[in-house]
Image (cartoon, rainbow, N blue to C red; front, side, top):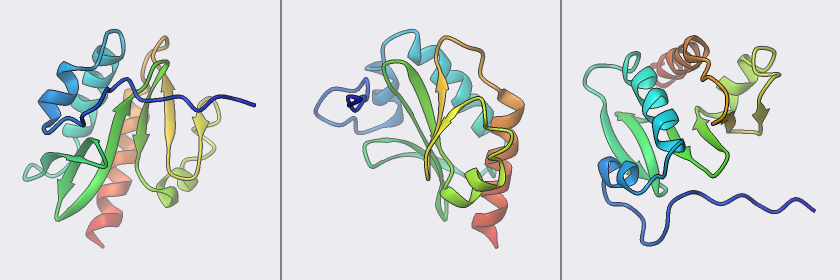
Length: 126
C-alpha cells in the first residue's frame, strides 16, 4: 500500500502565502515560485493570493486555483472539470479528480499550466 505523501509544511498552518513559501524547503520552493509566476501571469489583475485549506490560492470573487508543495512534487488544483479537459495533455503527469502533480525534478510545463489556469478563469467567470 502506498503511503500518503504529506505536504512539506509543518503545523501550524501558514497565515499568508509568504509564510507558506518561507517554510517550503528547496528545491520545492523554486518550483513552486515558477508555478506561482505562471499562474499570476494569466489570472485577472485584481486577483489576490490567499491561504485556503492551508495552501496558497489565487482568488478573484471565488478561488480560481490552489497550488502546493510536497516532498517530491508540486501540485496544481484547478478543479476536476478543467483537468478532464486537458487529460490527454496531462498523460505524463500523475493526476486525480482535482489535482495535477508536477515532479520537482523535471521542468515545469509552464505553457500547459497557463492554458489550464486560463480555462479555469473562464469557467469561474461564466
